[in-house]
Length: 624
Ligand code: COA
Image 1 (cartoon, rainbow, N blue to C red):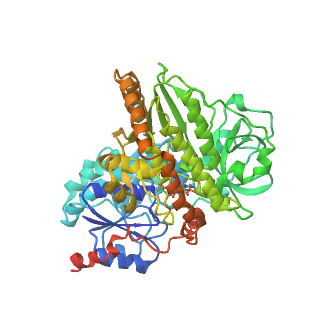
Image 2 (tube, rainbow, N blue to C red; image 1 turned 120 degrees about the horizontal axis):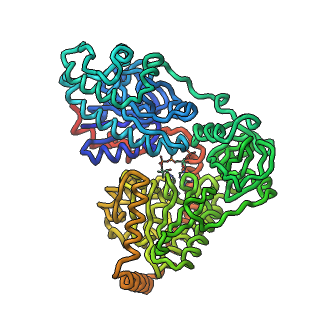
Image 3 (tube, helix red, strand yellow; image 1 turned 180 degrees about the vertical axis):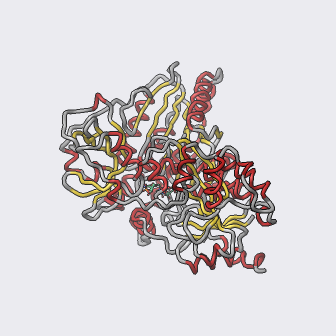
């Protein structure tokens, strides 16, 4: 099928759908939803069999949905409508939620239902739920919907309208769809689908469906999210912050300055200090500890409403002077998983002591200079431990996304900070590359982008969770050359020709495709807890390998041979020379691209590598 993705941006969900549907054999092209006329032109050029809208901020124009099959991915259960679906689900403490694929019609989110998939809710931020549960469910629902398209075209299958659901739900209940009166010739087929849909709805939805089906829930407003520090307990504070993360945050104030809060983590009882609710009492890493009426929360990121830097920054960077005056509540790097004290870095070891696990859960996978320095120090600590294998776990949602573009944007000299950051990033790579007395494994639990991908290649093995997406290229950031020893690491793994192709194509790669391209050595379960167990098992097996000593000897020999052929320092010097031009040269593309990325400037055109229908070639085969 020819599928046009009409989307607000090429976000993680859209990237995943793009890559998976392409792997399913469909022909994909992307158009950003910028203006009706532009979207209409894209449809004219591409002549899609299906228009899929995974992430829209406004309604699809009638000129499109009335003439072409257009399916919308809505991050809510059947009957849920409105632009704040997940926000309300978190705020209302729903225990189950879902994704519905609806046909676009005049009323937003009220079209006939093509498919729906449910998932259990997790105590996590909206962004994390979106990147994980919603994305997985959306892919399932989209695939189910696509399967119906041929039958729908043949008139042998029809989606279920909300009016029909409303009619059947109170009468028969969801478990007895067979009694549903057939209103079309293809009733049998639609009953089966109705049963599928019904089975996907949790029991409480019956009441919901009866009473409120199709009622639009309004955009969640600033006032709905406000925290009352004198009344809200920790649970409520966390719920409000999670429902607003990564966007728009909770409007609040710190040190008397209005700002939006993000990235909250509960404090443990031993971290509490006597304090007034709302008072900021300590700092750790880049976060501030703020008291609630019955505990405290760590606030990792804020967006100030004043000054020049009105974008998300680590709390201690946005309020540098105030934070510096607070006591630091340090926590040991080496602590068991059962120790619930939050911090960005955690090192632990397997029960038999043979394997170390280093997690670096940096918000959004962005790694600023100080974070890179702390990570390098943590790798040095791991080096001092008598283990045989070191697993680099990265973060839960992102393994790493490379240098911290927001911190760079906020620096007095973005060029100098870019330089410092990339050098600190290279130090992390170097610490890994020179860890020749043990085996290293990059375990990609979450997505990796740009420098983060190449950092992973500095490990001996790259193991990825099935379904994660990698973006192993720098060019989208204003033609950035990139460093992280990629000129050594990429050809070493995939060969020079494939390396050039990967860097040039600027597209997301699924873990499976990355494995086929030899960027990744193995993929394991898509389910995170299962993935983590598999990683632990395989890492321990590596450590117990009778040939371990030979493996280490071979590793050290290869590193020595590579070094003799061309020292690592030579690779980084060459890369840094090119980067120096990006940072300090006359072409400001990188600075411009970074500014727009950080400021989230609206897109004014779809990049050519995504809008394939705008390649001249498309006009020929499809101009019918
Ligand atoms: N620095 C700062 N913030 C970053 C970041 C980076 N390197 N990479 C991602 N982020 C932030 C995004 O701004 C976004 O912030 P938000 O929470 O305020 O919305 C969040 O992480 C999620 O990113 P998003 O773009 O929505 O994720 P995605 O999965 O859709 O896309 C990437 C992933 C990697 C393609 C995309 O984030 C990207 O291009 N990042 C920049 C990578 C880069 O050029 N790094 C520098 C060179 S090493």
